[in-house]
Image (cartoon, rainbow, N blue to C red; front, side):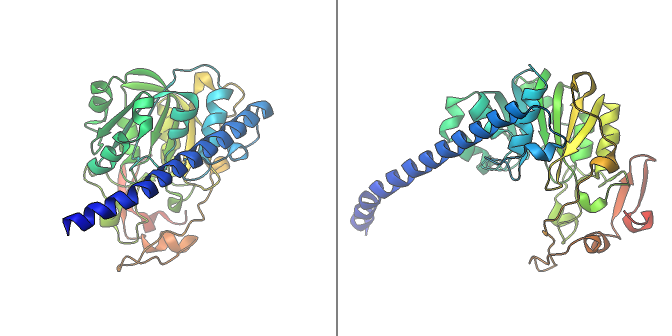
Length: 311
């Protein structure tokens, strides 16, 4: 049996090598296409809406294009980023910045196995990427940044942990980003400033079987950004990522009111108690979590979501 396995392994080696070569070629093609699109965005100059600059290389939706647009529109900035909630980094907001613009970066995720996979990639040694396996909360986030050499000005901070996003961003004071990308929960609507109550062990599936109860509303994030000296400048076309820029670095960008820049999400990721997709859309998504308790950050009260009225 051992001889058979050895022979099989020898036979598969050329296939594995060919597959790896194909993967590298495909990634090179993606990077080249992204570079061409980034160059086109720079030539276009200022665009009316952030989503007009979208393109996707490694981001989940069109955020690679938005980020390229912002970092080049706003002029020189510290070429450093932090992103947490990256899973295995195959789909992320900052990987194109790393590979195309050669920024240095810090990526953090609570899944240690995913972080090991990132460390095994060629780009980990080809670029200045610090990889940390840790579950981020509001008590440890600043220490994680400091311990890994990220303090003071940075170009971009990306927050996407599907839970305590509001509370963790609120706690961050070790770095001073020019641009913040923060995921918002469009199910909460544009008019109410709410977030899930803080729980350092929050997990969205455990919080509610629908997978719809997580994070913060766009308005809650806009109020927090205002306190941090940042302005809301728009959302991506998918309606899940909001963009904030330091007020002293806005350049030609116009600050937006939450309701003006809100984009509703159209993806149907709701699940039933059995874990299967239920494909809820529109207000039906909010109704299924109406009994959940949220924190109204404008008043500090913890209330039932359904008692706040229409979104």
